[in-house]
Length: 382
Image 1 (tube, one colour):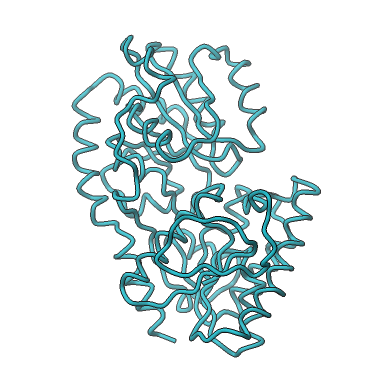
Image 2 (cartoon, rainbow, N blue to C red):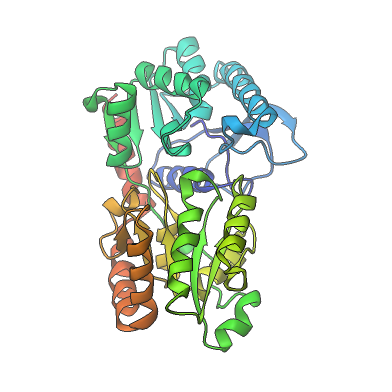
């Protein structure tokens, strides 16, 4: 199993998904050897974690979400990806294994190098494409080339949604029969049992204010600007509400400037990137969670919100909308409708209560164990 990150050294959902799936596969009897590019302390796992480069890093490796506009940071990321491929190939020659399972574009060169060196079959697990990360515009040709070569040379490809499968067919020319859809899962036991609200929201919650929440990277893909535009429209009709954006990213200053331009700074909070108990408390503090993504291959955060008791409004342009029926849904660009649905939740208490009751039952079926069953079926096709 080739992955770029695992908690706690993860900058997004990729590491969370790799951990959840690998742990479930291990519990079902699969023998997983998880290979990271660099030596870092990771969470306790029921599977062994190996390091392609045994030299310990002093900090988290470069984020897998860097894009071409990141300049030197992206060039350094590409260098790390290529080094990982060489080091992983060297390590693989010393190991006994049956197949290669590589997660996302960062691990494709390593997967191809090991396949070439050992002749073992390769599965590429696609959590996002370059078209998702860039919102469909100005894709990085270097990343696109790596992805297309990997998808073509892999024996099978797993995507996290039918939406992502369609992108591989239409944008990369991959035959549909080669692509297997395995939606992500979630296990409630992975999340701490803590009470809300989070400390910085105690006073506003006590004063009767509502909380509308965004959690994610502040990037073009995640649509934080659409969240703010909808917030502006909501505040024209309902002002006892705060909009909270928890995350960081290259659009942070742009989003802050938009908040100021719209004159809603006194109703928008930026707590930064949160994890663990703080994130759980934040979910529990919210009255509504919003995923306004422009292009979201899956989207774990709405599931995290639901298991913490908060209803969700999700973009129709998301993979999670394929498996979560009891959620409000909207096109990311339709901020008028997004605002209308937010107002409905804020004004009518029966709506969020019904949503969370039904979606909580639904999420119980979306386990990592179920995802692991489907991945095992893919393994058996090789």
